[in-house]
Image (cartoon, rainbow, N blue to C red; front, side, top):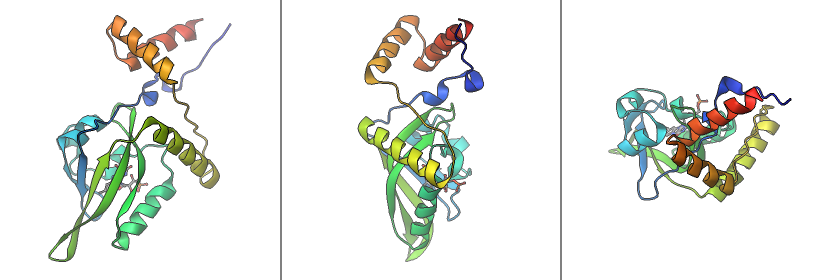
Length: 185
Ligand SMILES: Cc1cc2nc3c(=O)[nH]c(=O)nc-3n(C[C@H](O)[C@H](O)[C@H](O)COP(=O)(O)O)c2cc1C
């Protein structure tokens, strides 16, 4: 008899939201990383309303798979008045995630640094898989945390998408239903 215990009873954390190819995800923060501006695309991809994001620390979308050292290097670069770019896995409000390539730099008014801005673009699934492995390694070696992530194969994903269409639900709901059945076996 097989019995699986699911963390939190949900597969939502494994659901990736694709980032639209033709839209930029834009946000700005004050000098302490508090969000001062978020465009509609950022709100839509992160699952929040724009109003919910404004005034919140940008780590509202921090994903637990991101190594602390990546953000340490981001802030070090910003404090030296440099521009930082890199791959970021972000957490959605519904516990899912999305991957982006982010470019973060200072906003200057009459030569004075007043804010930071970030522009983000989509990355390929291959890049996401490579970065997931790299960040898993960084976290396990630098931070002694073990939380390894395994992606569904493209085939499994397509099969699930078809079946979710037939059942008229999202992939997340379908996976939860299948998992509930498995747990009863
Ligand atoms: C303009 C700007 C954009 C940022 N965008 C993100 C982001 O999309 N995701 C994220 O996790 N952190 C982002 N950060 C970094 C966060 O401020 C924060 O340092 C990070 O989430 C780590 O959280 P922690 O500092 O509380 O450990 C951004 C910072 C700035 C200045």
